[in-house]
Image 1 (cartoon, helix red, strand yellow):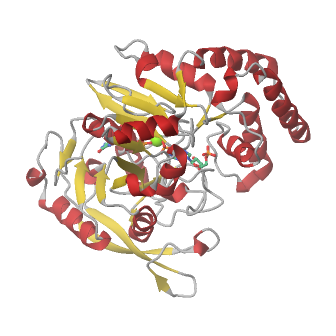
Image 2 (image 1 turned 60 degrees about the vertical axis):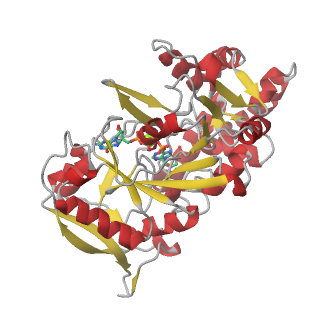
Image 3 (image 1 turned 180 degrees about the vertical axis):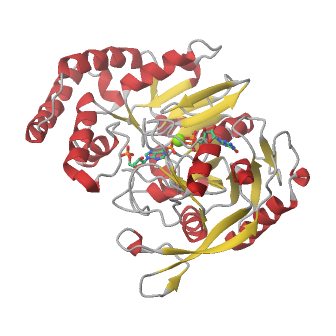
Length: 427
Ligand code: GDP
Ligand code: IMO
Ligand code: MG
Protein backbone atom coordinates (compact mmCIF):
# COMPACT_ATOMS: atom_id res chain seq x y z
CA UNK A 1 0.00 0.00 0.00
CA UNK A 2 1.28 3.48 -0.82
CA UNK A 3 -0.31 5.79 1.68
CA UNK A 4 0.17 5.66 5.44
CA UNK A 5 -1.58 8.00 7.86
CA UNK A 6 -0.30 9.64 11.00
CA UNK A 7 -3.04 10.88 13.32
CA UNK A 8 -3.30 12.35 16.80
CA UNK A 9 -5.56 10.25 19.03
CA UNK A 10 -6.25 12.79 21.78
CA UNK A 11 -7.04 16.53 21.84
CA UNK A 12 -4.11 17.51 19.62
CA UNK A 13 -0.46 18.33 20.39
CA UNK A 14 0.47 14.67 20.75
CA UNK A 15 3.81 15.23 18.97
CA UNK A 16 2.73 14.68 15.36
CA UNK A 17 5.26 17.16 13.94
CA UNK A 18 8.15 15.40 15.65
CA UNK A 19 7.15 11.95 14.40
CA UNK A 20 6.34 13.04 10.83
CA UNK A 21 9.79 14.60 10.65
CA UNK A 22 11.31 11.43 12.13
CA UNK A 23 9.53 9.10 9.68
CA UNK A 24 9.82 11.39 6.63
CA UNK A 25 13.01 9.80 5.19
CA UNK A 26 11.00 6.59 4.65
CA UNK A 27 8.57 8.46 2.38
CA UNK A 28 8.66 10.38 -0.90
CA UNK A 29 5.84 12.71 0.03
CA UNK A 30 4.26 14.23 3.14
CA UNK A 31 0.74 15.62 2.70
CA UNK A 32 -1.46 17.66 5.05
CA UNK A 33 -5.16 16.88 4.58
CA UNK A 34 -7.16 19.08 6.98
CA UNK A 35 -6.98 21.89 9.49
CA UNK A 36 -4.97 25.03 8.92
CA UNK A 37 -3.12 27.56 11.03
CA UNK A 38 -4.85 26.30 14.19
CA UNK A 39 -2.21 23.54 14.12
CA UNK A 40 1.22 24.01 15.67
CA UNK A 41 3.58 21.14 14.91
CA UNK A 42 6.95 21.27 16.65
CA UNK A 43 10.11 19.72 15.24
CA UNK A 44 13.43 19.75 17.05
CA UNK A 45 16.82 18.78 15.68
CA UNK A 46 20.40 20.13 15.62
CA UNK A 47 19.56 22.24 18.66
CA UNK A 48 16.86 24.23 16.84
CA UNK A 49 13.12 24.16 17.49
CA UNK A 50 10.76 24.82 14.56
CA UNK A 51 6.99 25.28 14.71
CA UNK A 52 4.98 24.66 11.54
CA UNK A 53 1.32 25.63 11.20
CA UNK A 54 0.23 24.93 7.65
CA UNK A 55 3.37 23.62 5.99
CA UNK A 56 3.77 19.83 6.12
CA UNK A 57 6.43 18.53 8.51
CA UNK A 58 8.47 16.98 5.68
CA UNK A 59 9.66 20.42 4.57
CA UNK A 60 13.04 20.11 6.28
CA UNK A 61 14.01 17.29 3.92
CA UNK A 62 14.77 18.78 0.51
CA UNK A 63 14.30 15.46 -1.30
CA UNK A 64 10.72 15.04 -0.06
CA UNK A 65 7.66 16.44 -1.78
CA UNK A 66 5.25 18.27 0.51
CA UNK A 67 1.60 18.78 -0.38
CA UNK A 68 -1.06 21.00 1.19
CA UNK A 69 -4.25 19.13 0.31
CA UNK A 70 -7.73 20.27 -0.69
CA UNK A 71 -9.07 19.55 2.82
CA UNK A 72 -6.89 22.26 4.38
CA UNK A 73 -7.98 25.87 5.04
CA UNK A 74 -5.01 28.11 4.25
CA UNK A 75 -4.30 31.58 5.57
CA UNK A 76 -1.99 33.18 2.97
CA UNK A 77 -0.70 35.77 5.43
CA UNK A 78 0.43 33.12 7.90
CA UNK A 79 1.72 31.01 5.01
CA UNK A 80 3.99 33.87 3.85
CA UNK A 81 5.37 34.33 7.37
CA UNK A 82 6.02 30.60 7.73
CA UNK A 83 7.84 30.36 4.42
CA UNK A 84 9.90 33.47 5.15
CA UNK A 85 10.97 31.93 8.45
CA UNK A 86 12.35 28.97 6.48
CA UNK A 87 14.50 31.09 4.15
CA UNK A 88 17.35 31.23 6.71
CA UNK A 89 17.80 27.47 6.34
CA UNK A 90 19.07 25.67 3.29
CA UNK A 91 15.59 24.71 2.11
CA UNK A 92 13.78 24.94 -1.22
CA UNK A 93 10.07 25.36 -0.46
CA UNK A 94 9.37 26.82 -3.91
CA UNK A 95 10.61 23.54 -5.36
CA UNK A 96 9.29 20.90 -2.99
CA UNK A 97 6.02 22.38 -1.73
CA UNK A 98 2.82 21.98 -3.76
CA UNK A 99 -0.60 23.39 -2.93
CA UNK A 100 -3.94 22.07 -4.10
CA UNK A 101 -6.00 24.52 -6.13
CA UNK A 102 -8.99 23.21 -4.17
CA UNK A 103 -7.58 24.30 -0.79
CA UNK A 104 -9.91 26.85 0.82
CA UNK A 105 -8.61 30.31 1.66
CA UNK A 106 -8.92 32.00 5.04
CA UNK A 107 -9.61 35.72 4.64
CA UNK A 108 -9.00 38.41 7.28
CA UNK A 109 -12.77 38.58 7.79
CA UNK A 110 -12.86 34.86 8.64
CA UNK A 111 -10.55 35.66 11.53
CA UNK A 112 -12.76 38.56 12.61
CA UNK A 113 -15.85 36.37 12.43
CA UNK A 114 -14.14 33.70 14.52
CA UNK A 115 -13.48 36.30 17.23
CA UNK A 116 -17.04 37.69 16.97
CA UNK A 117 -18.67 34.24 17.26
CA UNK A 118 -16.49 33.30 20.22
CA UNK A 119 -17.29 36.57 21.99
CA UNK A 120 -21.00 36.02 21.41
CA UNK A 121 -20.79 32.55 22.98
CA UNK A 122 -19.58 34.03 26.30
CA UNK A 123 -18.94 31.33 28.88
CA UNK A 124 -19.75 28.60 26.35
CA UNK A 125 -16.96 29.63 24.00
CA UNK A 126 -15.04 26.84 22.24
CA UNK A 127 -11.64 28.30 23.03
CA UNK A 128 -10.90 28.57 19.32
CA UNK A 129 -7.39 29.48 18.22
CA UNK A 130 -9.10 32.48 16.51
CA UNK A 131 -7.40 31.68 13.22
CA UNK A 132 -10.66 31.77 11.27
CA UNK A 133 -10.94 27.99 10.95
CA UNK A 134 -14.65 27.62 11.80
CA UNK A 135 -15.88 30.47 9.55
CA UNK A 136 -13.68 29.29 6.65
CA UNK A 137 -15.05 25.73 6.81
CA UNK A 138 -18.55 27.17 7.24
CA UNK A 139 -18.16 29.04 3.93
CA UNK A 140 -16.79 25.92 2.27
CA UNK A 141 -19.85 23.91 3.23
CA UNK A 142 -22.17 26.81 2.38
CA UNK A 143 -20.54 26.82 -1.08
CA UNK A 144 -19.38 30.40 -0.69
CA UNK A 145 -15.68 29.87 -0.06
CA UNK A 146 -12.69 31.09 -2.04
CA UNK A 147 -10.19 28.49 -3.16
CA UNK A 148 -6.48 28.75 -3.88
CA UNK A 149 -7.17 28.18 -7.61
CA UNK A 150 -9.38 31.29 -7.62
CA UNK A 151 -6.38 33.55 -7.07
CA UNK A 152 -5.32 32.82 -10.66
CA UNK A 153 -8.64 34.10 -12.02
CA UNK A 154 -8.94 37.68 -13.35
CA UNK A 155 -12.19 37.82 -11.36
CA UNK A 156 -10.59 36.97 -8.01
CA UNK A 157 -11.02 40.48 -6.58
CA UNK A 158 -14.75 40.47 -7.44
CA UNK A 159 -15.25 37.06 -5.84
CA UNK A 160 -13.34 38.24 -2.78
CA UNK A 161 -15.39 41.45 -2.51
CA UNK A 162 -18.66 39.52 -2.76
CA UNK A 163 -17.66 37.25 0.12
CA UNK A 164 -16.28 40.03 2.28
CA UNK A 165 -19.43 42.08 1.83
CA UNK A 166 -21.39 39.16 3.33
CA UNK A 167 -18.92 38.90 6.19
CA UNK A 168 -19.09 42.63 6.94
CA UNK A 169 -22.86 42.57 7.11
CA UNK A 170 -22.64 39.81 9.74
CA UNK A 171 -19.92 41.67 11.63
CA UNK A 172 -22.18 44.72 11.87
CA UNK A 173 -24.30 42.81 14.37
CA UNK A 174 -21.32 41.97 16.54
CA UNK A 175 -19.93 45.38 17.56
CA UNK A 176 -16.41 44.54 16.43
CA UNK A 177 -13.72 47.17 15.97
CA UNK A 178 -11.54 46.49 12.97
CA UNK A 179 -9.44 48.13 10.26
CA UNK A 180 -10.01 46.02 7.18
CA UNK A 181 -7.80 48.16 4.90
CA UNK A 182 -4.62 47.24 6.74
CA UNK A 183 -5.56 43.59 6.95
CA UNK A 184 -6.38 43.50 3.24
CA UNK A 185 -3.05 45.06 2.30
CA UNK A 186 -1.26 42.14 3.96
CA UNK A 187 -3.73 39.66 2.51
CA UNK A 188 -3.24 40.71 -1.11
CA UNK A 189 0.55 40.89 -0.69
CA UNK A 190 0.39 37.32 0.60
CA UNK A 191 -1.84 36.28 -2.31
CA UNK A 192 0.82 37.52 -4.76
CA UNK A 193 3.42 35.57 -2.78
CA UNK A 194 1.26 32.43 -2.94
CA UNK A 195 1.16 32.69 -6.75
CA UNK A 196 4.91 31.99 -6.80
CA UNK A 197 4.26 28.43 -5.61
CA UNK A 198 3.15 25.36 -7.55
CA UNK A 199 -0.64 25.39 -7.39
CA UNK A 200 -1.77 22.00 -8.60
CA UNK A 201 -4.56 19.54 -9.28
CA UNK A 202 -3.39 17.67 -6.22
CA UNK A 203 -5.64 14.62 -6.57
CA UNK A 204 -4.10 13.81 -9.99
CA UNK A 205 -0.62 14.67 -8.71
CA UNK A 206 -0.99 12.29 -5.77
CA UNK A 207 -2.50 9.54 -7.91
CA UNK A 208 0.34 9.78 -10.42
CA UNK A 209 2.81 9.44 -7.56
CA UNK A 210 0.95 6.45 -6.18
CA UNK A 211 0.93 4.86 -9.63
CA UNK A 212 4.68 5.27 -9.94
CA UNK A 213 5.26 3.62 -6.57
CA UNK A 214 5.90 6.65 -4.34
CA UNK A 215 5.30 6.28 -0.62
CA UNK A 216 3.11 8.96 0.93
CA UNK A 217 2.69 9.92 4.57
CA UNK A 218 -0.51 11.84 5.30
CA UNK A 219 -0.02 14.17 8.29
CA UNK A 220 -3.06 14.79 10.44
CA UNK A 221 -3.65 17.97 12.41
CA UNK A 222 -5.50 18.36 15.71
CA UNK A 223 -6.62 15.08 17.28
CA UNK A 224 -9.44 12.54 17.05
CA UNK A 225 -11.26 13.95 20.09
CA UNK A 226 -11.49 17.29 18.24
CA UNK A 227 -13.09 15.68 15.17
CA UNK A 228 -16.23 17.50 13.99
CA UNK A 229 -18.27 14.25 14.04
CA UNK A 230 -16.65 12.10 16.71
CA UNK A 231 -15.02 14.60 19.07
CA UNK A 232 -16.51 16.21 22.17
CA UNK A 233 -18.95 18.28 20.09
CA UNK A 234 -19.43 21.26 20.12
CA UNK A 235 -15.99 21.66 21.71
CA UNK A 236 -14.20 20.50 18.58
CA UNK A 237 -12.57 21.90 15.48
CA UNK A 238 -14.43 22.15 12.16
CA UNK A 239 -12.87 19.31 10.16
CA UNK A 240 -12.64 15.53 10.16
CA UNK A 241 -9.37 14.91 11.94
CA UNK A 242 -9.81 11.12 11.71
CA UNK A 243 -8.75 8.76 8.90
CA UNK A 244 -11.74 9.48 6.68
CA UNK A 245 -10.52 13.10 6.55
CA UNK A 246 -7.36 11.92 4.81
CA UNK A 247 -9.41 10.33 2.00
CA UNK A 248 -11.60 13.38 1.41
CA UNK A 249 -8.83 15.88 2.15
CA UNK A 250 -6.42 14.46 -0.41
CA UNK A 251 -8.65 12.55 -2.83
CA UNK A 252 -7.21 9.19 -1.84
CA UNK A 253 -9.39 6.08 -1.97
CA UNK A 254 -9.59 3.97 1.24
CA UNK A 255 -8.06 0.95 -0.50
CA UNK A 256 -4.82 2.89 -1.01
CA UNK A 257 -4.29 3.29 2.73
CA UNK A 258 -1.90 0.96 4.48
CA UNK A 259 -0.69 1.73 7.98
CA UNK A 260 -2.59 4.05 10.31
CA UNK A 261 -0.13 5.34 12.90
CA UNK A 262 -1.93 6.57 16.01
CA UNK A 263 0.05 8.87 18.21
CA UNK A 264 -0.70 9.63 21.86
CA UNK A 265 0.94 11.23 24.87
CA UNK A 266 1.62 9.00 27.90
CA UNK A 267 -0.90 11.34 29.60
CA UNK A 268 -3.52 13.80 28.26
CA UNK A 269 -3.63 17.50 27.48
CA UNK A 270 -6.25 19.81 26.08
CA UNK A 271 -6.21 23.51 25.05
CA UNK A 272 -9.44 25.46 24.97
CA UNK A 273 -12.80 24.55 26.50
CA UNK A 274 -14.66 21.25 26.67
CA UNK A 275 -14.89 18.07 28.69
CA UNK A 276 -11.74 16.40 30.00
CA UNK A 277 -12.65 13.71 32.54
CA UNK A 278 -9.09 13.01 33.77
CA UNK A 279 -8.08 16.66 34.09
CA UNK A 280 -5.96 17.37 37.18
CA UNK A 281 -6.62 20.52 39.18
CA UNK A 282 -3.99 19.83 41.84
CA UNK A 283 -0.21 20.10 42.06
CA UNK A 284 0.17 16.90 40.00
CA UNK A 285 -1.46 18.77 37.09
CA UNK A 286 0.82 21.76 37.60
CA UNK A 287 3.90 19.54 37.73
CA UNK A 288 2.83 17.71 34.58
CA UNK A 289 2.33 21.02 32.77
CA UNK A 290 5.73 22.27 33.88
CA UNK A 291 7.65 19.07 33.12
CA UNK A 292 5.95 18.70 29.71
CA UNK A 293 6.25 22.42 28.85
CA UNK A 294 2.56 22.23 28.08
CA UNK A 295 1.89 25.55 26.41
CA UNK A 296 0.18 25.80 23.02
CA UNK A 297 2.54 25.94 20.04
CA UNK A 298 0.09 28.23 18.20
CA UNK A 299 -1.44 30.43 20.89
CA UNK A 300 0.95 30.01 23.83
CA UNK A 301 -2.05 29.19 26.06
CA UNK A 302 -1.37 26.78 28.96
CA UNK A 303 -2.57 23.28 28.14
CA UNK A 304 -4.84 21.57 30.65
CA UNK A 305 -3.21 18.33 31.85
CA UNK A 306 -4.44 14.98 33.19
CA UNK A 307 -3.87 11.24 33.30
CA UNK A 308 -4.15 8.98 30.27
CA UNK A 309 -7.74 8.12 29.35
CA UNK A 310 -8.09 4.57 28.01
CA UNK A 311 -11.79 4.64 27.01
CA UNK A 312 -11.10 7.78 24.93
CA UNK A 313 -7.99 6.24 23.41
CA UNK A 314 -9.77 2.99 22.53
CA UNK A 315 -12.53 5.02 20.88
CA UNK A 316 -10.02 6.93 18.75
CA UNK A 317 -8.26 3.68 17.78
CA UNK A 318 -11.61 2.22 16.70
CA UNK A 319 -12.71 5.22 14.61
CA UNK A 320 -9.36 5.52 12.84
CA UNK A 321 -8.52 1.85 12.35
CA UNK A 322 -5.14 2.35 14.00
CA UNK A 323 -2.59 -0.36 13.14
CA UNK A 324 0.40 0.92 15.14
CA UNK A 325 0.68 3.11 18.21
CA UNK A 326 3.43 5.58 19.08
CA UNK A 327 3.60 6.76 22.69
CA UNK A 328 5.04 10.23 23.28
CA UNK A 329 6.47 12.14 26.24
CA UNK A 330 7.18 9.11 28.46
CA UNK A 331 9.98 11.20 29.99
CA UNK A 332 7.47 13.69 31.42
CA UNK A 333 5.93 11.04 33.71
CA UNK A 334 9.38 10.39 35.25
CA UNK A 335 8.52 13.01 37.90
CA UNK A 336 5.79 10.87 39.50
CA UNK A 337 6.09 8.13 42.15
CA UNK A 338 2.71 6.81 41.03
CA UNK A 339 1.27 6.96 37.53
CA UNK A 340 -2.47 6.62 36.95
CA UNK A 341 -4.51 5.46 33.97
CA UNK A 342 -8.26 5.96 33.61
CA UNK A 343 -9.90 2.62 32.78
CA UNK A 344 -13.55 3.70 32.89
CA UNK A 345 -15.96 6.40 34.01
CA UNK A 346 -18.53 6.51 36.80
CA UNK A 347 -21.73 8.49 36.21
CA UNK A 348 -23.48 10.47 38.95
CA UNK A 349 -26.05 7.63 39.30
CA UNK A 350 -23.21 5.19 40.09
CA UNK A 351 -23.21 3.29 36.79
CA UNK A 352 -19.80 2.57 35.29
CA UNK A 353 -18.82 2.44 31.64
CA UNK A 354 -15.68 2.00 29.60
CA UNK A 355 -16.79 3.75 26.41
CA UNK A 356 -16.44 7.40 25.35
CA UNK A 357 -20.10 8.32 25.74
CA UNK A 358 -22.34 10.91 24.05
CA UNK A 359 -23.04 12.32 27.52
CA UNK A 360 -19.39 13.31 27.94
CA UNK A 361 -20.22 16.94 27.21
CA UNK A 362 -23.16 17.47 29.56
CA UNK A 363 -22.61 15.03 32.41
CA UNK A 364 -19.65 15.01 34.71
CA UNK A 365 -17.97 11.62 34.62
CA UNK A 366 -15.71 10.51 37.43
CA UNK A 367 -12.70 8.60 36.16
CA UNK A 368 -11.95 5.15 37.57
CA UNK A 369 -8.17 4.77 37.86
CA UNK A 370 -5.65 1.95 37.80
CA UNK A 371 -2.40 2.89 39.54
CA UNK A 372 1.17 1.97 38.57
CA UNK A 373 4.49 2.34 40.29
CA UNK A 374 6.31 5.17 38.54
CA UNK A 375 9.80 4.84 37.03
CA UNK A 376 11.01 7.99 38.71
CA UNK A 377 14.35 8.27 36.89
CA UNK A 378 15.48 10.42 34.01
CA UNK A 379 15.31 8.80 30.58
CA UNK A 380 17.93 11.18 29.15
CA UNK A 381 20.37 9.45 26.85
CA UNK A 382 18.46 6.15 26.62
CA UNK A 383 18.20 5.07 23.00
CA UNK A 384 17.24 1.41 23.25
CA UNK A 385 13.95 0.03 24.45
CA UNK A 386 15.57 -2.66 26.60
CA UNK A 387 17.45 0.01 28.56
CA UNK A 388 14.23 1.71 29.70
CA UNK A 389 13.20 1.19 33.34
CA UNK A 390 11.10 -1.91 34.05
CA UNK A 391 8.22 0.17 35.44
CA UNK A 392 7.93 2.08 32.15
CA UNK A 393 8.09 -1.15 30.13
CA UNK A 394 5.31 -2.56 32.36
CA UNK A 395 3.26 0.57 31.67
CA UNK A 396 3.74 0.12 27.91
CA UNK A 397 2.88 -3.60 28.03
CA UNK A 398 -0.24 -2.90 30.09
CA UNK A 399 -1.46 -0.25 27.64
CA UNK A 400 -0.71 -2.44 24.66
CA UNK A 401 -2.75 -5.27 26.14
CA UNK A 402 -5.70 -2.97 26.92
CA UNK A 403 -5.58 -1.31 23.50
CA UNK A 404 -4.93 -4.45 21.41
CA UNK A 405 -2.60 -2.55 19.06
CA UNK A 406 1.22 -2.71 19.20
CA UNK A 407 3.06 0.29 20.66
CA UNK A 408 6.04 0.50 18.32
CA UNK A 409 7.66 3.82 19.25
CA UNK A 410 8.28 5.29 22.68
CA UNK A 411 9.37 8.92 22.58
CA UNK A 412 11.52 10.18 25.46
CA UNK A 413 12.28 13.79 24.54
CA UNK A 414 11.49 16.52 22.00
CA UNK A 415 14.55 15.98 19.82
CA UNK A 416 14.40 13.89 16.66
CA UNK A 417 17.03 11.62 18.23
CA UNK A 418 15.02 11.00 21.40
CA UNK A 419 12.81 8.47 19.67
CA UNK A 420 13.02 4.78 20.54
CA UNK A 421 11.80 2.02 18.26
CA UNK A 422 10.30 -0.85 20.19
CA UNK A 423 9.45 -2.83 17.10
CA UNK A 424 10.83 -1.13 14.03
CA UNK A 425 8.37 -1.53 11.22
CA UNK A 426 9.73 -0.53 7.88
CA UNK A 427 7.38 1.54 5.78
P1 GDP B 1 1.73 18.35 17.49
O1 GDP B 1 0.76 19.47 17.35
O2 GDP B 1 1.08 17.01 17.63
O3 GDP B 1 2.80 18.34 16.44
O4 GDP B 1 2.48 18.60 18.89
P2 GDP B 1 3.04 20.01 19.43
O5 GDP B 1 4.27 20.35 18.70
O6 GDP B 1 1.96 21.02 19.48
O7 GDP B 1 3.32 19.64 20.95
C1 GDP B 1 4.16 18.62 21.31
C2 GDP B 1 5.26 19.21 22.21
O8 GDP B 1 5.94 18.18 22.88
C3 GDP B 1 6.32 19.96 21.42
O9 GDP B 1 6.83 21.00 22.21
C4 GDP B 1 7.39 18.89 21.20
O10 GDP B 1 8.69 19.45 21.01
C5 GDP B 1 7.32 18.14 22.49
N1 GDP B 1 7.64 16.70 22.42
C6 GDP B 1 7.37 15.80 21.44
N2 GDP B 1 7.73 14.56 21.83
C7 GDP B 1 8.23 14.69 23.08
C8 GDP B 1 8.74 13.75 24.02
O11 GDP B 1 8.79 12.55 23.82
N3 GDP B 1 9.13 14.26 25.24
C9 GDP B 1 9.08 15.59 25.53
N4 GDP B 1 9.49 15.99 26.73
N5 GDP B 1 8.61 16.49 24.66
C10 GDP B 1 8.18 16.03 23.45
P1 IMO C 1 -2.33 20.50 16.48
O1 IMO C 1 -2.35 20.10 15.03
C1 IMO C 1 -4.58 21.39 20.10
C2 IMO C 1 -8.48 23.31 19.59
C3 IMO C 1 -8.63 24.72 20.08
C4 IMO C 1 -10.12 24.74 20.43
C5 IMO C 1 -10.73 23.85 19.35
C6 IMO C 1 -11.31 24.62 18.18
O2 IMO C 1 -1.21 21.35 16.86
O3 IMO C 1 -2.49 19.28 17.34
P2 IMO C 1 -10.28 26.01 16.16
O4 IMO C 1 -9.27 27.10 16.14
O5 IMO C 1 -9.90 24.81 15.37
O6 IMO C 1 -11.65 26.49 15.82
O7 IMO C 1 -10.34 25.57 17.70
O8 IMO C 1 -9.69 23.01 18.89
N1 IMO C 1 -7.36 23.09 18.64
C7 IMO C 1 -6.22 22.47 18.95
N2 IMO C 1 -5.79 21.99 20.13
N3 IMO C 1 -3.84 21.23 18.98
C8 IMO C 1 -4.28 21.69 17.79
O9 IMO C 1 -3.65 21.41 16.63
C9 IMO C 1 -5.51 22.38 17.75
N4 IMO C 1 -6.22 22.97 16.77
C10 IMO C 1 -7.36 23.39 17.32
O10 IMO C 1 -7.81 24.98 21.19
O11 IMO C 1 -10.31 24.10 21.67
MG1 MG D 1 0.30 21.31 18.22
